[in-house]
Length: 236
Image (cartoon, rainbow, N blue to C red):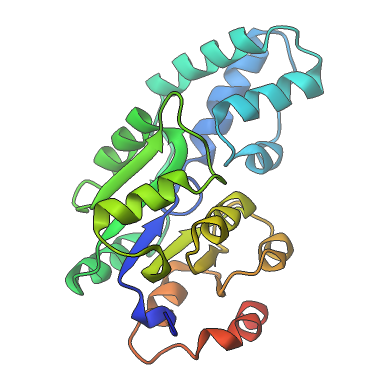
């Protein structure tokens, strides 16, 4: 694929890319931490923990706070989050327009996330109910988490598009590493949870600050050849 506008499919991460789920994640985590007589965390700290899967997040929090029962913390957090999944979460501004435009162009789209599969489906059904995703792949037991490329490659297979022609869009280094491992060009979603300098250091083809910038980049003839990707990544 010589240009981003030549993508034949687009794969999206969920948390921090399509939907701002951080408010609910942080709220539930802090509810559970207080219940366990542990210190609540500022949202900025929780933001840095999102993306690697819930078990990794809880394990890190337990380590930092000296909690001896990470398993109980995980169980209590999971129960809380299931009950308060989208009380504060919302799609990012411009996401509806982006998805509608891609659908109108006939581009298949998919979601590839480390969020539990059933929860990913529920978030999409409740917050993006009119979007027809060609595949939604959340984490399931026994399945490797991103940055392993397995789910990204499976999404490409289900969409019937070769990985090299699938554009991956994500907001954390985990997403960029996933795309590289899968042989997919990747756009860093700068509106999400990753730090700009860290994302740029992972070599995305493009760094976008808003979904509208991504939409503009995907217009035919809108984007220079990928050989100029580092200039693009550093200029937006």
